[in-house]
Amino acid sequence: MKDLMKKIQAQAFDSQPCYLVALIESEGSTPRTSGAYMLVGEKGLLYGTIGGGGMEYAAQQLAQQRL
Image (cartoon, rainbow, N blue to C red; front, side, top):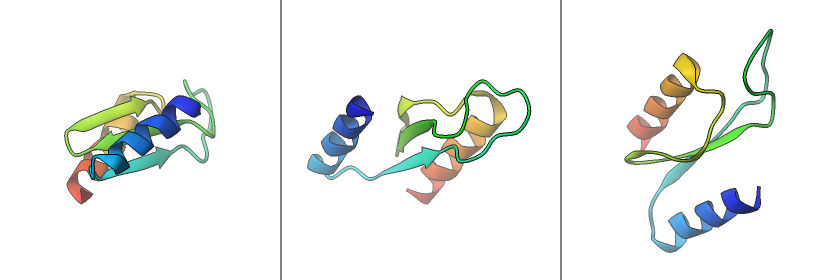
């Protein structure tokens, strides 16, 4: 969590927008559980993972579109 906060702080100091994506619920067999985070900037993934695969890709694309 400390590294994540450092990344967010660096983005803020550089005036670079980003989204913090959090996995709040999962069902069945998943690579990551609730509480997983990833930080997405305008050019893509900056830090972390919420489990990879289609769900992570879709979340990353949505975050980039909104930025």
